[in-house]
Image 1 (cartoon, rainbow, N blue to C red):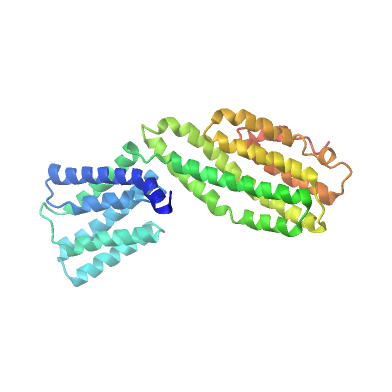
Image 2: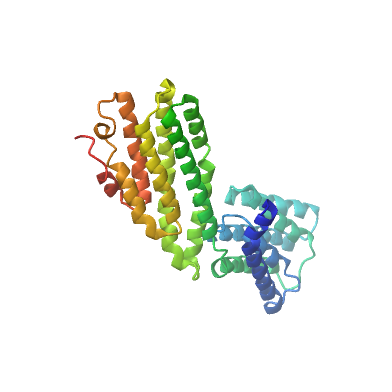
Length: 351
């Protein structure tokens, strides 16, 4: 499937949702309220929903409220001072100023400005004052209702982003394992550089998950999946920490690997991490695997003591063991243990 077709397929739920919402908002304004040309109701509905990844109800409300405010401000100027060039300039300036105060997103201000300009230049609609403002409120309300009642099922995007991040994590640790088996300084530095470039992946996963949870909380059709999504949020948060700790471990290994010596003990530990994260990725769709994930990670955790893993080795070597412990703890919590349970799974380093 090429990128164009894939993009279309991914957008089909949004297209269906927008079309249905537009038809409903138009019908209410035109047939119920008798507004002859409810352009505002239609455009506010489209602007509020859009094709953005972040379809959280709060974003829909913010967009609808901001755009409707722009319409109301412009309509107030038109009703008070009529239409003309200076009225157009005043309406646009006031709307853009208000929009920038309300939201840091530049596209938000542009959409609000476009709505304001339409009100300022199009003929005044019959039906009394603030007809377009009423249409804007209808468009925003219908957009919010459709977010809950005709959701785009954001679980798919969250799952896709989660799988993508976990796959990247596995690839990084697998590369590190290969380097540790043979010893190669420059390759460790390359893995570290790749690890530093993963932040957009975790940010995308966090954003799609936040959107999915917010929609599931108000949608009667998706609320049954809220528990699974919240479990995935726990995984996402702790995998973010695990990636940060992977960078710490890789930095320490990059210093040690300057001698070009293989380190099979660390390779074996991190090979277990690869297996555990692979199982964790599968558990996103098969939660019954979570106990197996925990079991695999606990088998790694019980070895994380310098006297067990590297007896008699110098501090420069054993310090890496102390860096790996927080990483494995993050993975254990991601797999469902509490922080106290994760700590208890590791040998006491004071002993």
